[in-house]
Length: 257
Image (cartoon, rainbow, N blue to C red; front, side, top):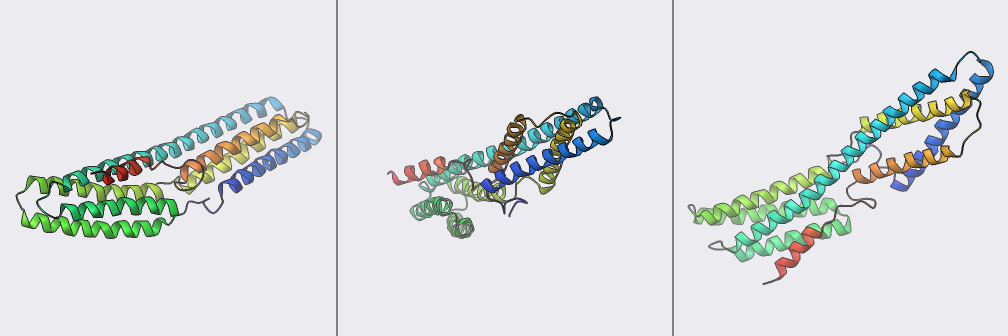
């Protein structure tokens, strides 16, 4: 599932946001300069208060959106660790099964290899299809063992852990593709930013002051924050990618006797 701004690479998003912010400030400044020359009765003090309130609202929206993106990033990290633990538990319990334990362990090793390879290659759709196919094979073997040993506590514990592995796969897919920042929040954030920063430029033009170089710092800072939020919101793109080290450590432990 694509987000509303996923069609833009992160570098283009940073550049586009910077240009949009500078244009908003410049348009507001020119409008303020025009009003200063032709509407002298408009006072800058009330305008300054309104600009401050609008910038405060923008800061609140930025903090709110950053919190959403950060919490989703933390959730994805937790799911990786939880899945590694669930697969490890299932792998250990498979060794105690009355029969078929080695075949199930081989499938679990193949499962972890497939998931890691899908992340390295970027072919996530193929990785998801392959994972679900292995789920079916694992569950078929679990059913066969359960039918032959209907009262076994060990088999029951194994099936419980296998079911958790399948559930965590669904949670990771949901977190990666569907638990994204809604498009309405992006629209609201950019709309408030254009209006707030345009009002800031308008206030500068209304007071008759010249353009300040501090505007560049404001524009660049806002653009970097927006870039960081988008980076957190994209699971498999950018510099902030969830580490798969728990899965790598799990695969290494599976290779040991």
